Image (cartoon, rainbow, N blue to C red; front, side, top):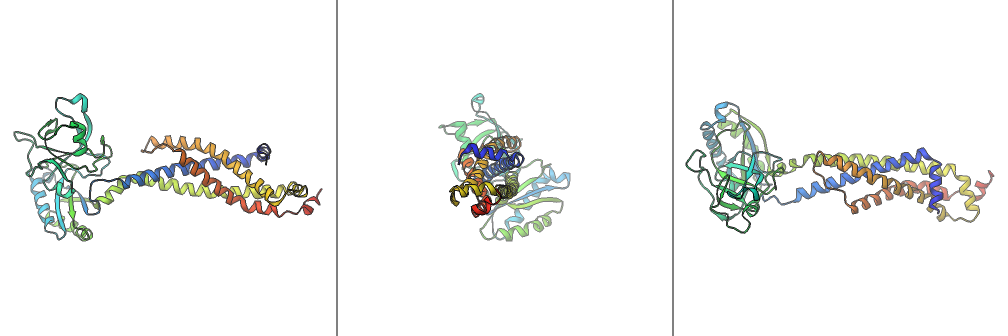
Length: 397
C-alpha cells in the first residue's frame, strides 16, 4: 500500500476528492467547536453558585404608574407585597432587591479600599440594595462582622454599611480584617460567603450588598423568595394573582426559579452548541454518503485493476485494506484542513461569545470519529471489491 500510489489514484478523481476533502474539513471544524461549546456550557452549569437554585424563586416586577416607581409610594408597595408573600404556606423568607443574582450584566460600579485606589480598584462589582431578609433568602453564610438589620437611607448622616462577599473582601484587604474599614461605597459591616452575581463582573463571585430602601425603579425591581422543598410549584402558581391583588398597577415580567435563571444565563452558548451539533450531524451524514459513493464508484471503475491484482496473488484482505487505506488517507488530509478551518471558526465565534481555544486531545478525538465514520461508509464497497473474481475481471483483457 504505497501512499504515493494512493495519492495518484486520488488525483485521477480531482473534483470528487476535492469535494470530499472540503466536506471532511467543514465537518471536523463544526464538530470540534460544537464539542468545545457543549463542554464549556456543561462545566459552567455545574460550577457552584453558592445559591439554592431549585428552592429560590425570582419575580421581576415593574410598577406601571410613575408614582409607584418612586419613594415613598414604592416603599409602601414593597412592604405590602412582602407582607402578603410571607403569608403563603411554604415561604421561608422573602426580600426585595434592585436586581437578582445570576445576570449577564446589571447595576454595578467600582469598588476600592479608601487610600489604596490605584492598587486594588475593581471596576465592575455588582451592587445590591435590598431588604434585611436578603441574606436568609440567598442562604449565604456569615463569615465575619454583623449583618445590618434595618434599612438605612442614603440621605442620612452616614451611608448604609456595606456587606462584601468573601472573595472580594480577600481581594481588597488580603490578610487584613475588613470589618470597619472604609471603601468608596461605605464602611464594611460584614463578610458573607460567595454567590454568583454577574457574568460581566470582574469576577462572578464579587458582590456588594447594602440594606437600604429603593428610591426609584424605572427599570423595575426583583422579589426573591426562599421556599421550602416540595413547595416551589405551589408557591409559584399563586404569586401572580397574589401580587395583582395587592396592587394591580404592576407588570410582572417573569416568575422563575434561580435554576431556570442560571440556565438562561448560558442560553447563547447552549443554543450555538446545539445548532453546531445539528449541523455537524448533517455534515457527518453527508460526508458518509459521499465517502460511500466515492468508494463504490471507484470499485466499479477499477474492477479490471482489482481483478489483475487478484490474478497476481493479492488476497482479499490486501484488497480490502488498500481501499480502506485510501479513505483513511483522504480523512487525514481532510482532517488537517479541518484543523485550520476549526481554528478560524473558533476565532470568529470568540468575537461574539466566550469560547475556549481548541485542545489537542479534542482534535485527535474528532479525527478518530471521522476515521470511524469513513471506515463504516467505505466498508461495504470495499467488501464488494474483495468478491471480484480474477477470472471474471480478466475476461475483458
